[in-house]
Image 1 (cartoon, rainbow, N blue to C red):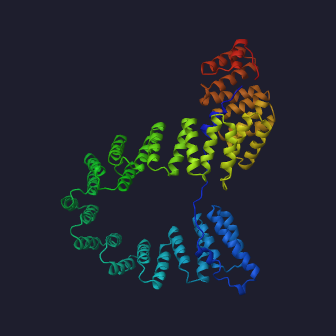
Image 2 (image 1 turned 180 degrees about the vertical axis):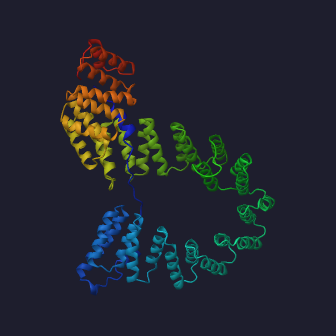
Image 3 (image 1 turned 135 degrees about the horizontal axis):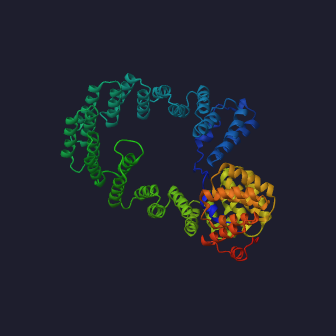
Length: 587
């Protein structure tokens, strides 16, 4: 009996697969030089010093190559040699911060700064870590300290002021912004920030004064009136809000952004029709950049928020974007996402491919195409697309993985084996992906009738990833087909069924293993469940059910299900003989 395992691989294998990728970095001279900080030769034996430097540079390399755990081990060894190396602490903290282990990162940085209080890079990273952990006041104090050394650094000033505001040290924040303003003059970014602080303090009049100061500095700048209009609207003064929106249109008739402000105004007024009409005018405007339009589109189509668009309105805005920005890859990507929500996979793929015609080197879009190819079971499409992906992104293992899937489906077994071996070289600390690669190679080897070699590969795949249920299922089935290690097959398929009790394919495998063990009554129980859970039209499952019924001496019912299998597409010679001869025939 032939099982459609090929379809199972394509439809189910990609779920749960974890991506594994790393960016390209360079080890800078500054990083290497840090190894010598606080590590004078007279404190360490020359041999230990050389060992330290080797381990330090090797750690930087490992981190660069996407092996952070190895880098952590090497840097820890550095600290064993020199417990006071602030450089090793800093690099280790960097890795922990990248892994969102902010507690470890902050402890290391705090110690590194005590050892080397003049290193601003340590302080900057610690400030970032404090921001991530919402220790805004502590981060603000770090920037204040940095400013004492570099009093004219505007970036430090702005960060200090913003963090003071976040920590609700409002008076200090205003003082900091005023200090900046003395150096830069009246500045939109500073003024808006001050306005927000005054609003947080409940000083609405001061907030209005700030915006008015901005307008006085440049009365012809239309967008400043927009800030004033928005402020009036937030305070419930609709008349003055509209007055200033109209002022924008008077000063700058081509200003597209004012339509978005008016859309928001009408939304709050409850006039949804006029709100959407203003939104459309903003989307049509060539003076509004695409990024602003897309940000608003995402806001209006999210699951939350006021004024969420209905499906027809979403489609209308997308069509406007396609007309105004036909050569922007992002527009086609947004359209594709909209189509995917409607489960229009083929149409979505078409739009993604249009996006790739414009921006060929966007890996994330290529990845979406691979998944859609797989979901559509378009193996020729997947084969062609992954060939291109492997050329464009030779270090991305997913391209090789999906190409191997396509090769198995297209019965290109030699190519499957070659591409798996190549793809495995790029898998880093990802047992799930490694296990899937090994399973695909096992499938190809099994199809070449090298069963013992295939079973060894399946064993290795299960050892690498014991929770890979597709591997467990297919391995169990192949063992049952061969009538080999049936107890082992039952344990594996039983584990799968326990995890997925409603999956007809997995239930069928378990039933077939039991059938091969001669446990026909129990096999029928699981096959009944398989048919009830979506398998009633599957010719393989129907044929298996007929086989079980035959062994239970229900000859008439067995023939009925064999005939149902034929009606649903089963056409093997063995099936036709079963129907004709009214008896079970083993393949």
